[in-house]
Image (cartoon, rainbow, N blue to C red):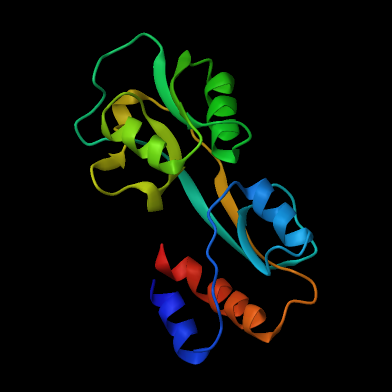
Amino acid sequence: PDLLRAFAGSHPRVRIELRVGRSAELAQALQSGGLDLAIVMRQTAAPDEVGVLREPMIWLCSQKGLATRQAELPLALLDPYCGFREAALAALDAAGRRYRIAAGSASLAGLRTAVNAGVALTLRTARFAHSGIIEAPRELGLPQVPLAEFATRLRAGADGPAADLATLLSGNLALSG
């Protein structure tokens, strides 16, 4: 919110349209000209990147813990394709850890609800941990996971205000974590 406020103060006549969606959908909208700027989960480097943010992925659960103890680790994951989902499953498979997808969702709100209820745990960054969601306890023995990478991407030919916002975001996102 503070970054958007600063941008709005310096660009009072610019219309800002905010869209939340899957990284692949946002990247496609950027390429087709439907968006000037996008922050997406980075799989590989793209020529239109103007900044990259790296944050640790962490296992998260309800501060109340899991509702039940189970032989298989219950997971709450976004529907495919999701970089966090892929990282969670790859890490658990590599560690030989048994799991089951106890809750699936197309939205972060649904994911948050399942985790808050103690139905399952999930893999995200620390930005997801608030309002009853905490880092999972070490005694669960969860495997190490990679860093998450997010790219600020600017559409080729985007106008000055979009480039200004991209610069503002790229310079400040890492500081706001």
